[in-house]
Image 1: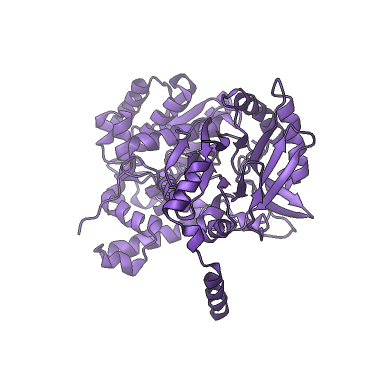
Image 2: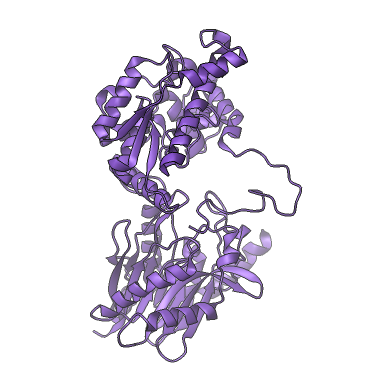
Length: 294
Length: 280
């Protein structure tokens, strides 16, 4: 069975506010991924992977344009491998664009001429509650859009985006094969069984989305501690039935790889033809009515 | 009705706290910690976590008795240090404290002066710890638990002062469980908590409530966000519920930095907002 794509997730621990230093450390991740057999075609990193997440006023100091990041990644990649073979990278970053700041993720091809940015997703659902304060420091994105890659149709969601079922529903309607979700999720709520409530909740959310929308889901969280808050990793890849097919265990840096089979998508969609039977026009009519009545 | 706090798996909690201590010490360029070891539960647990995180050779335990402190406290403080393999120092704060008490006309034996005198002792200990931290290039590791912080059962800028605090999100009864996991000597983990500011003082005696009860109320109030009516409907005594709510509210100031009057366009901590590990 032909693979759709070979994927790697790198659970990374950035040093806060040190874009250059983290970029340098990323070179060893590139080198490591390049040595894997089979060599992954896509590498996913976490949200705000090169700066740390809780920056507050520091967002402005650490934000870059997608073009700057793509060029910096391309240089780091080319100087970290012996023989340059193209690699697609998914990475979360604080973006500055037209004097506005966003919490974004990018899909970019490195090592193949100039870096090619396929898509930039700006986080739509900004958590501003509890320990989160995003909307104070970044703008809300307004688009949830799928895009084509050489191996299939993909989409990006950034962390909290995945907690709004509308995000993945919109992607389901756009026929995506793989949702990539960079995240910076803090662990909270240790239970008597030794589980962490927030990690368990993420597992349920990801399983539901993969199974309901019959897509592969690649969730890449980070590790490390920022101002007393521990990021809990738990990076994983799920198949279109909602089963975990690869994961990174523990609170340390590490990576996981997965071979995403085209056949799994076909089997899931034949088993339960949710896509064929979906009725977006009914949903749209109901949404219009609900929004007008609000 | 008896209520219990949900238990936490202590091994997972200890792992998180050890990683926290290691990360928040090293990112500021430090490798050493200093803990005020009182012979009580909280400081024993903080010291045990610090020893795991930084290594026993990188943690200093400081015993700081006042002339009225119990001998048991000092003996148990030494037991903590020897069990964990920590180097310890003994700094008698009597001269520091009595010098000021005399100047201020306070007497530790006078009932009316006890709280003020107790605060002076707690702040004298803070001075010693921060001075040792400057001498040794180490960080003061805090020992205040969540129960004390929420109820304000601490001395502002005294025992509540630290650079990093591993226990601040654990209720007292959860600290007991963690102590057992960390192998804190039974004599300490089974001891009645006491600030030991005057002879015979116990925390439960002074507050007039049992930790088991008050922790359950705090957990339902703070973590589960139940309101006063819901707490009473769950079977907690009305008097206890109202006392807890009022203590939490009226002690908010102890959990915050001092207020700054806004004058300029960008004011520290109001609209000049950065986290502490900014640039680290």
